[in-house]
Image 1 (cartoon, rainbow, N blue to C red):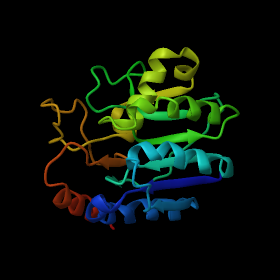
Image 2 (tube, helix red, strand yellow):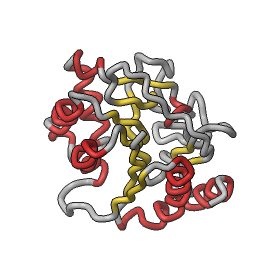
Image 3 (cartoon, helix red, strand yellow):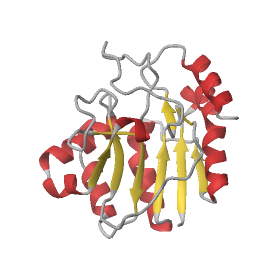
Length: 212
């Protein structure tokens, strides 16, 4: 399949992003996927919000885009992507702090697959129209989750996987004072170094584990 592995980070995140980057490039190269890392962003838009625009500009060239946040490291390069043809547009994991970690939870927008389906642009436009979230703490994630609450069609195009599938986090992840219900384990596809202290040291540790 024609798949793009897409990531990005701005200069504020350069040290961490540079450590995490090689594992993503190696994953793409191993499976013959295209790879792109975006390093230039508009000055008046947070990189997380601009993610939606990056997807919109590229999706027509591919069957799917695998977005991986700049603070994620691929720890298992085994290919696992499949397209079951169910008309889903977004496949993402439940957020690490979800109560049940099931398909009814809201997704994390840290790492996900975006399919090039007939209505993908409509779906992205609906999320981007929620621009009141562009300067809020969770940016595009809040926008997508709000669309899911307000529009059944939008929600029907989202598949939510268990958190460890695409959003495994470190056991010390506690931005809200709550430990993750299902932290990263050996064999997981990736680790998302969100909500932790000493991210640089952890990134170096997991990059070495990934052989990068």
